[in-house]
Length: 87
Image (cartoon, rainbow, N blue to C red; front, side):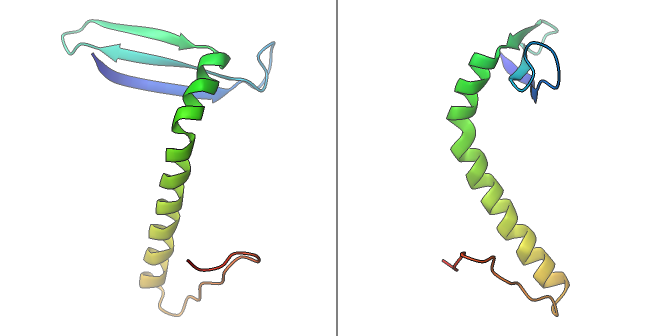
């Protein structure tokens, strides 16, 4: 089975307001597919598993974006946020 779609969102209203819900869809490549609803409990477990990877990816993206901006604008000066040091 191949993952086709993963959707997670925070409910904005109703009895699940503030909780994460979603859907995941798998396909076998021959037209057969199934979709599961993700409950808030399942989403909390899922986010716990991928949370660290998401933070690592965000840090890598941040570094690449800063490098790109500096390359495109040589006069741009990078200023560290208060309390943050360079590694």
